[in-house]
Image (tube, rainbow, N blue to C red; front, top):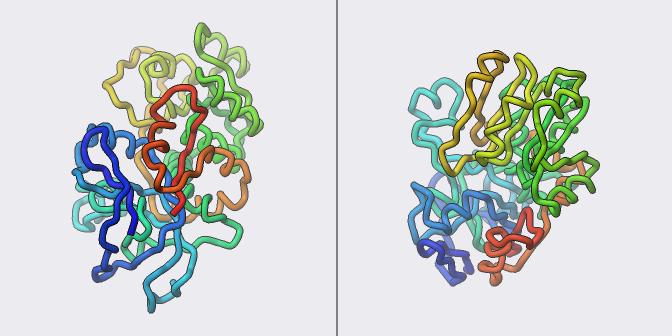
Length: 335
């Protein structure tokens, strides 16, 4: 089968490899679409601490069941996969928090993933897709699950307002999921005009934070209070500088982005406002199941997918996301 292989820092290839043979408790899936995640970019850069070459990347994918005689999942069933690999024995796993397992692994990072014609996955992690969800959207359930988890895990209250920093895949998905959850109003901040325009085309108001005095601006927009919820989907120091300026007294700051470098925060402002700063990581299986329904309800999720390429153009796909000015947001491969 053809597969996209991480061969080492800044080196990927497309080559023929043996088709996987399912082990006990796992099933074989014929892959349709697989998306590039920010984690995959880190792997390709050689900076991911666990991924080891050679590796078939990809933990965002959809496909059809290839294995036979799987109860409830007959051959040909269209599916996506909850890609987390938890030990089941550590304290987080034993207390219902397997998504933050002490030794958490993922398909496409700790073992071969979905950027290939076939992939094997644990049977209990396979999630059927409804007829309303396209194969392309099926591979987008994973990033939406991140945002569903963000709101469910941290207790977002319908009717509250929100500010979202960043109009990339997770920022846009967060804004759309907020809309589904019933937020009263959403403001987005983004420095890249192409991404800002993509958000505007989905019906969101977007402003650039460059040169903006964030605290008085946010107070003016919210009757002198600041925002109920502030979501950091950017993960850069300039945003960290102003998170506590944007939030209201006793408001909520949620760090969704994965910061690549240590960041500083003016924590005294957090004390003055008695605000909460919380973090989220991946998702629970229930979040994944909810996300699979949401993508069928909100047509704008599909607009985040800007490029779908054949697997033979693997290098082009990664270049689109590492080169400025391409307009790429979510890039997928079609097998």
